[in-house]
Image 1 (cartoon, helix red, strand yellow):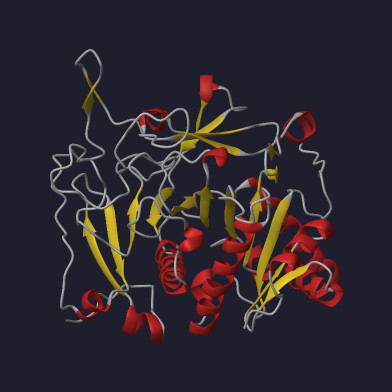
Image 2: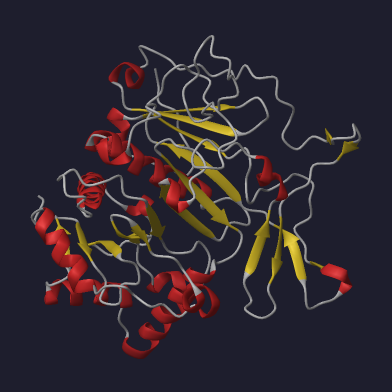
Length: 417
């Protein structure tokens, strides 16, 4: 059976032979993709269930409110802060999304799990009873491109100080594995290789969607981070603007290029490699280091050796080496804080991919990098963003980058080829 072909995503040799992507549509019209690495599904000997059995209305259709009145679909909006220039998406429908983790849990079922015939909870997002990796549009998105909604600026209260537009972006979920009680750190490298392919696939395809400016694959892990669903998964936020942190980085990378002719991110990586002290891992394609001005009590940046702007530009070897390094990073992160029993802990973390924007001219002087960090500063302590950090954005670190790196050096060798 012939593999599905996509307009902009072009798999390399490994993905062509070992990963099969099967698209379908959920009952309410959202895009859904199976990414199979099981040989029987890759070969076409077995096929996935494509029909979503839920009786869901079209996601953009009007619905009934609590009083039974029909109300139109309320698309997310975004407003620009006139003091900072930041766009702030506002999605009131997210207040009703299911939460299965932490003290505020509102649902017993797991919508990210494979379907379980006979289970009383049948509002899961996956049509099949098993899967390898799946991707689908978020049912409760922070941003979405609603049909028929003009993407134009209006003004709150009619005042030009307060710009408002539809939050016409896109939000997707990537489930890394069907084991809802598993941890990303425990996944085999081969499965993480499929996750890397998922990031590349979505970056390539979404980059050509109208109105999208920045593609941000990321992973939230752990209740302390604010994860609402306990399942090994990540997300892809596709912004119709340049997010504030990326805007700051682009200003600095562009200014550095105009001043020196160099690439700031490459020169930072080279400087860290030259110093050596804060490098925690390296292989033939990637370098992981604690940045010299690390903010978080555990923070590691991962950079490709070759100049690459976006994840979909990575070649087969770089994707394999990334999967290997990511596995090492997650495992060492879990071992970082010692409770005294030598078992470490399930580290809460955020894993954030920073890649070149789609249209902004400054993309030429940017470089792909992963920023991995944790709020945890001890086995029983969290780094809270208090007055200085939250009120003024002025960071105060509770440790030093050298101490973070030294702890990583205790957990395993630097060379992992």
